[in-house]
Image 1 (cartoon, rainbow, N blue to C red):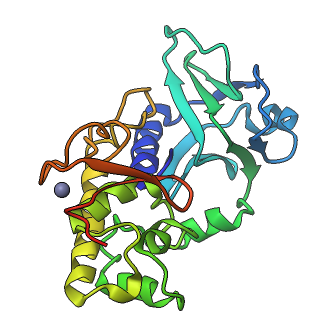
Image 2 (tube, rainbow, N blue to C red; image 1 turned 90 degrees about the vertical axis):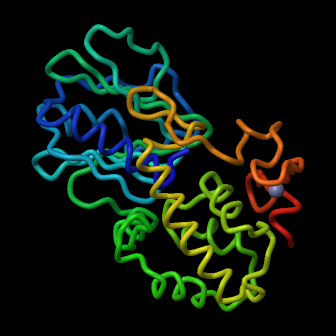
Image 3 (cartoon, rainbow, N blue to C red; image 1 turned 180 degrees about the horizontal axis):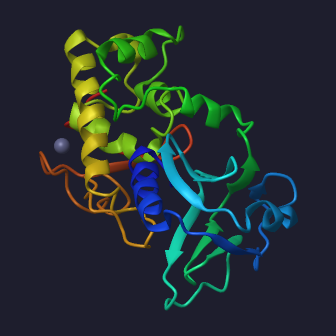
Length: 274
Ligand SMILES: [Zn+2]
């Protein structure tokens, strides 16, 4: 899934690889998908995109924007994979959109469960996309303790740490995936209530969030996810589906997997007390 480390990694890779490439053909879905979302009718994508040159790419929150000349962009969101193929690579048979470039390379978009592949001119009318563009990323220096405190105070209800950090897109692109190592590192249980946080715990949580997200991004995303070239990320997740059978890396206890607030959480019962 696209979360902060992956959207940033993929945008850096796509921006570099596709710079100044011209889109020469657009191929519609070979495998139509009920939950692949487009801007209007994807039949119109060829008319909008062919002849445009890629100028940059921007990763923010759970989105990647490919920005072309003439004010045209293509945006993907969480749930959509965007994969690059060189001219000599074999192209995938199944996709929900494929763009061909002037050097014979292509980019295939595939949707797993649900996801968007939006092509548009001007700005994208989507509240989560707008919210993400207008928010301060935890990867930026401007995301400091004051900003973090504001996010905590902004919710009047006494919700859990998982609800606070990884629901409602309060921090765009911080989802259930990256949450596991952030909480493990801060020694906080996903169900721990926000009212119970001491000043020290808040500080630990803030630094864990900053440090873990930076590390994940610097390593090219998590090892549970694929990048623009189809390679898994270099960040070794501490707690994820990949490590579930392993003992806690700190104390050796068994890691618990539990369904909680949309998605499985992984935690160590002795290191992350409720
Ligand atoms: Zn432990």
